Amino acid sequence: MTKSHVPLIERYRDHLPFAPEDQIVSLQEGSTPLLLAPVLSGMVGATVRLKLEGANPTGSFKDRGMTCAVSAAVREGAKAVICASTGNTAASAAAYAARAGITCAVIVPEGKIAQGKMAQTLMHGARVISLAGNFDQALTLVRELTDTHPIVLVNSVNEFRIEGQKTAAFELHEDLHGELEALYIPVGNAGNITAYWRGFREMGASPRMLGFQAEGAAPLVLGHPVEHPETVASAIRIGNPVRWEDAMAATTESRGAIRAVSDAEILAAYRLLASKEGIFCEPASTASVAGLLKYGTDGASQVVCVLTGRGLKDPETAIANNDGKVIQCVAERGPIEEAVLGDP
Ligand code: F0G
Image (tube, rainbow, N blue to C red):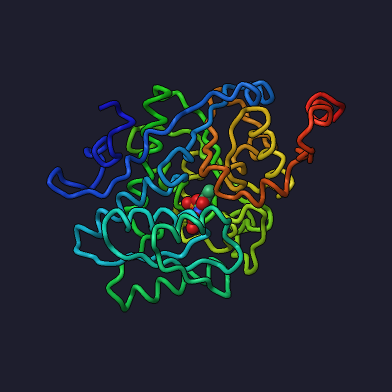
């Protein structure tokens, strides 16, 4: 098998809390591409690479943590998992639960999750509860629920999630032979930045961890929770991250920072990546690139932007935010010629 066909837990078993005899639940996640970004490299004067986490089976980085969280739940004999989610955790939990033959419930903020994620979650057969409230309220409620019911919580408060997600740092360390200087990463609930830092430390590496939140949902930048978070990047519309302390430790220890980018900057990076680099990822993912373009590399010559989820997750935002026009045309030669070759 090539490494891309090896389940993540098998590839990194030495670094993960699973024994060879443990049954694992896998969709062959991980081993995602690391792609050179020539246009971005030219713009910032450094070698910029993109870690394409949207290449995971359900289209986001969540699968790395979910293979571990669901495998551990099954090992403990669990029959059900639950999460609060802005969409990607829900889609991933639903897929891995389906694969494991256990049930899954997700609580999502009403009207605030992208259509692609909702489609996935429903197709995998999860019970979807649409909460008249935001992500932070949903997470508080599922934590209360799992305190009193035998349902495993698979949000990133679950340590197995962090364990699985740290493998992305292993891959970067291997692919770049330890030469990575700075990592640009979107931050919502702050599990992923926590996981990368753990992974780098286990490899003896310490690139600067540069996290980016949307301006309207930037509690870690402001230093206090945001009661009504708002951003076009629905995946990171979070006002009180559960991994707050860990994220601050990661940035302090690595001499990094958590900074804010505006929705306009997120959308500009979203269009640039798709139209100039050929990479379509969801808006939250492009917070990393928006951060790179806004704040620069501060002298680092080898940098990576993590693109956390793929563009098809959120078709509504794509359709609403680009200049591309669809030209209506009758089925005749002359009008077609004009439509294809005429002035735009
Ligand atoms: N990018 C995407 C596409 C996400 O879905 C998320 C989080 C993040 C970035 C931020 O990662 O929370 O570890 O700091 N999505 C969660 C969810 C909250 O429910 O799918 P984080």
